[in-house]
Image 1 (cartoon, rainbow, N blue to C red):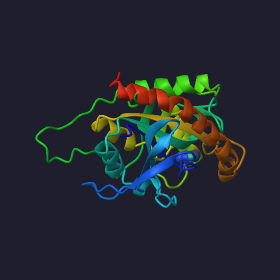
Image 2: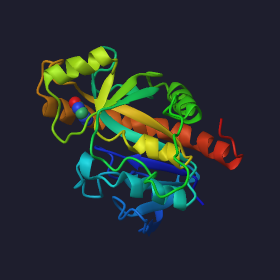
Image 3: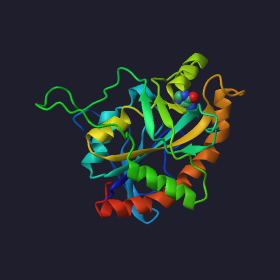
Image 4: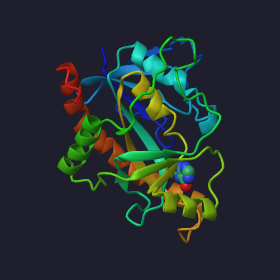
Amino acid sequence: MAQIAVIGGTGMNQWPGLEVRERRSVDTPYGAISAPLLIGRIYGIDAVFLARHGEGHTLPPHAINYRANIWALKQIGVKSVVAIAAVGGIAPWFPPAAVAAPVDLIDYTWGRAHSYSDGSSPHVQHVEFTEPYSPRVRRELVHAALAARIDIADGGVMGVTQGPRLETPAEIRRMKRDGCDMVGMTGMPEAALARELGLDYACLALSVNWGAGIGEGEIHAEIAQSIEQGMAKVRRILEAALPVLDAGDAAGYRA
Ligand code: HPA
């Protein structure tokens, strides 16, 4: 059974190369997942793919059922999750088509169902989030990128906004002052929910545009230009990283 899942975002609604053996619709106590889980084989290992925005990219970031998605992955036995995110670059070192494995995040989202703790359990769960992304999964992503000779930033702070609109230049300036290096709309509550359920979760972030007010160009044109080239890099990193992660999962390695 697959222990590795990839959650694909904008620019990765499908996973080319995945030999799909089963499309599984999972019922969860939280409602429907974004799309059927695609369970199959790729790079010689079992893996699961979930299209975060739905197969036809119909779900905006604030309407994604993050709780159902993460619950479904846990339920089918997934241990490690690589979350692909197309983001805007804020730091000068993160131009369009660059890749990063962020190390920390700031959550600016609101009104999303963001926890499995709903007051019905006798224990209030305050999960530790000092390292919001799994150090093990991050490390393997970075090593794999280096082995595949793809530049990757080992770190960076992800700011997660509510969307679906893009930010104003003043919002991006504020995020920069806050310490954000990149901005996306789907990183939370996904990462926190994965932590609540004990999944090893890390993000592979692809810059597809400069944050509002930083670049010269029009944002949608930048995205159109960089997304294909960037996603090709993401797929090569996955190809190098997933077999190693899978071996670690099989050995019960979690650190
Ligand atoms: N802002 C927020 N989310 C994004 C962006 C952005 O500029 N680009 C891609 N996802």
